[in-house]
Length: 538
Image 1 (cartoon, one colour):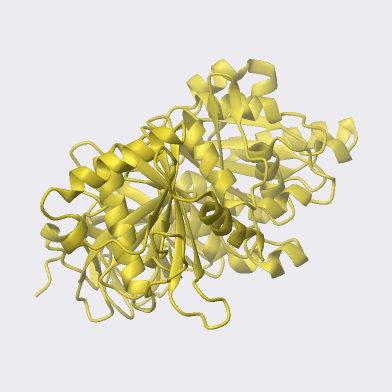
Image 2: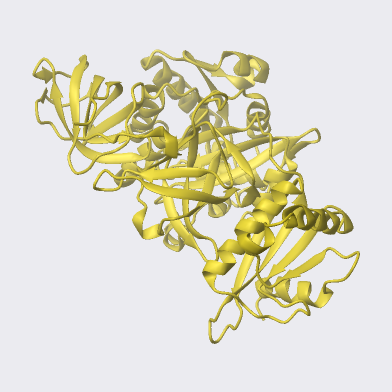
């Protein structure tokens, strides 16, 4: 018997009885269990179970009243979870976790699941900030974040970075190949960290217990995957950037490239000099001076936090000032300083009040018993379980009507989420195979108009010659990464030039709005732009 299935066996063994915290349900249907006042009755029953369990109840779905494992088809299990979510909302509680198994492990027939129900509904984490990491490969981004979210010292071999990598080949090679995520937080006693980041429930615990959350979007340092790094820095609604520079290597061309992207997207940035434990003091001082000069070269003022203090850094970080912290994930040097910074830095991202919900899809996957899930960072507005949304555009420009089944934030099930949160939204009405990165989720009444082209003000940051009409870089806008043709209004653009251009996606339409910023890149050429006009579709 696997450890996971032991959860199911323990719940069945504990049994359903009056005054207990376990409830058995073979299935829940909207027609039967939400009709004729049953919603209120079942919600009252759920509150009773939660109170009996000192704030936590266990609902076992797919079993008979006497605990027999019956199993139900995936579609019926999904509907049961929808009903359970509505009951939780009515009872002022929330579904903290759902685990599913095949009713018969050999025949793979039907599903049975255990839902953990806990007190509390919406996480009001107004102080939640999202930090995007950047930096050259092997400069300690993932290791530093791993030590921050766990409080554990690294072993000198990048051991804590394994808490963030999601692919076996990444762990084997010691290189991140895609975006990964980490979270920790703070309460009135100090940091709330993960004990075992590989356990989904541990991340959920941090989200539930912390008064303030810090989410990390850990990007890719290896040059061939720069496109993925840009996606992480442009496609997520970040509050701050964290650039790492290793003390043994110093600033590299990739360091400058990543810093340029952070600053081009107007993201307040902190620089962490890593691996201070493996170099002599003279070398460390040299790298600190190199970092300061790197920042001055791009018209930024470096602020050494060790010298000026966290109070000054929190007050000054922004358009012109970049705090610099010297760290070591092995000895712990500088980690308390970063803790203090992240605990106190204000949010800079979007506010939800009065704005329409919008989220660009960054990842898609399918969960047994739940269905298609779209993951990304909420750009604006709020979303709740049960909301009626539309997803698209599809390759032909159409949109698909969908319904929000459930929402998770770092594996913690929530009833509502707001702008700036990194979430996974389970959707009814679409298959995972139909969803793609770059699509958007918006309310049905929004009446979206996808476009193949738009007007933009662009700045050429780096290009070997001149940009002529028909130039085709990759445009990174929100989570869209698509080849596009540029048609400068004046016919050409030189390095350092700014001007107006028409931008035309090469393969398919996307949802684009005025004011959105983007990065375009081709080879070593790079530039930034702002959408100024979106022509109406014909």
